[in-house]
Length: 271
Image 1 (cartoon, rainbow, N blue to C red):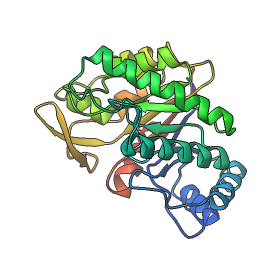
Image 2: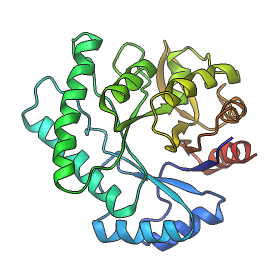
Image 3: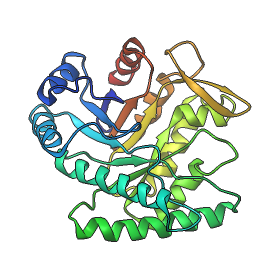
Image 4: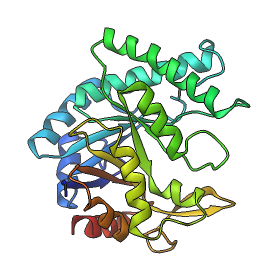
């Protein structure tokens, strides 16, 4: 089995990057995701200091781009598209400054299109974005997240296909979302292992699995909200058993709403 890192989905201190890393270590974490879902809150010097502190203490960083930073717009023009490109560009810049392993983003929406047409649009717009990032020295790995809406873009098959067609975008497994869209099917290790196997086939050698995990409330095969660990039916033990089948390392980010839940997940995954 590869090394399993665990960390929270938000930086625990926004005043000092050094203090943030020390808090992570004190809580037993060796990973953390920079939380930009609601917008940017750190500048480049802060990101550089965060990266230096994290590297010195062996804490792996990742970054979640703002929620409006998705590709696959109906037209590659207009204010919303420009804002999305700008958000992903800046996310990549801060990832490069901090040494974050991957920039996580959402795949967008079907918007009345067939799944094939929507995926084609995402891939084309990602290609143009990649050229822009390469010109700025920001061509960091991106990770497209499995979503929690059963009838929209973002299934496991969708994100694996986007990764397959781009080569530089990794699938990000969100097992809470997958538990919701499967009507609570993720109860045993083999189903977790099947998802990991699908991702393993398109990941470059040495690249870690990137995973989001929490307990989840859902209805009609759609996510509702994250739950404190133990209040729903998703558990970390089968994920740990499935990860044990792979030599590839993994980074598991807890999106739980409270620290006690993240600690419960960490204890299981850390073995």
